[in-house]
Image (tube, rainbow over all chains, first blue to last red):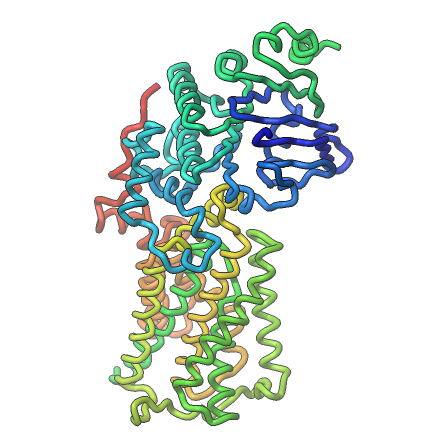
Length: 246
Length: 303
């Protein structure tokens, strides 16, 4: 059984159909979701992570339908995400951003109201995540004063803090310089080896092709191709979609 | 200046410190801007007044009931915040303030426009006291307890959850924070504290009138929070002290004092929008050079 199945999902924004009958699955892999602007990639992420309820269709996670759940409950099941337009907690430090993720199991409980968050164990876990994402030098920096590449890493560290089984990365390489992109690729591979399943939306084709084991291509709300990177690169529909030909 | 006059001012300052700190939980911690805090202040005052006058209940019961009842009302009046955000929430909380005042004004049970008078002096440990040093101490203890509670909240997961919804509700949801739940908590806690302040006020003055808790009072409380430094613990305290004290100190220019008071607010917002002791304000950086906002920020990578 795949960890995630999207079954015939359609979504309308008013009169605009953003997704048309999209079905896909994600398993123990790094799955790439690519496609031209406006293809519906982020809409699909928003549906999987509960920020949108699909007009039609199901999202099955570990065998259970979850498309009706709000985002704060989806995340408790182990689906973490980052945002295309970064949303670090701007009023918190980098370390506090990660701690905010570590708090995930507490927020829904009464003990969350009364338990102090800065315990030795939590600070230790946060340090570990900061090292993993190479953020230890920015521990006490306010998250909103950092360059975009570092803010993206803060979001990844915060997402990892919830101990996800499935991690959705929305254009993690956008705005990164070449060196940072390489480091990001290594980080993603490392996370995958640790058993975290990853779906990533990417515009940087070389990045997606080198990193993903399988790729799903969306164009105008529909899946036009899926398969291994080498197949996708040779797929005429994909080439046409990207070059804007019919 | 007589000692009685000074004690009255100081007692008021203590009560307003609690009020400003209570609103700071909502505005500073959780980022929910409210222009209705005077309504909760009023609900606490009226709860206490009604219980003391109509049911002859002792002060301790009046006071605790004021906190609990106002807290519960706050939970319900916080519901609009689930549907509206930002400027719309400001309007909604304003509306709540008007509704609450109307109830005090037009429902006979609450004494109408004539208010409720002759609230008995509180009795604690067998001693009856109205005003004076004991009442100042009582109000100060309440302000200190409020400060302690705010400090403790800021150290807990709920304090962190408030910060996340203040920053970005989508990002908060992405770490499992239900913004609905925490907004309601913030309204409840904030209202409960304001209710206690209202009870202290009612027993101090001995009477309550609807207009005391009108919309302008909400503005005054919000001004204290913003003037001092929203989101910090020191800010609302210093804001309450300065803004309660300034009109008294400016009494010698009588009619012009509120002109000057207004000008002071305008100048502050123009030149120190973080408040006088807010994070990143000029004065706070002078007093506290290790402020994390500046000093601990590592050098940006130069690309």
